[in-house]
Image (cartoon, rainbow, N blue to C red; front, side, top):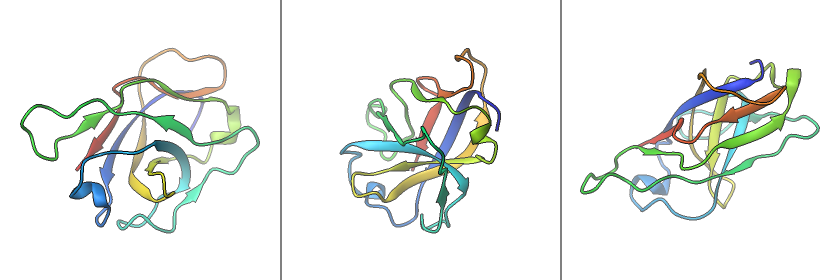
Length: 129
């Protein structure tokens, strides 16, 4: 993956509690070099200097729709990772217990970012149940 602006269509993992409970708690987003299993285990996260998971917030669900998709409320930026992100193909959303909530394939999205920046604009990360 080259620096730029991306989108993520993440599916909630099979056994995660958010399939049955309201989306709550602090959530973070991480970049993966190897995706997890459908159950959310065995993923490999990017391990480079200056990289860390970033906080992510989601907007409210649609009125009267059970388990509807939720979109990111704010921009999420991993800063200038440059070529260090070359192996990233997936991203994951983590809960406060460090469990994978959802994951998906990272896709290129039109937008402007600073030199070497990896970012997801508001609304471009979708969490599907």
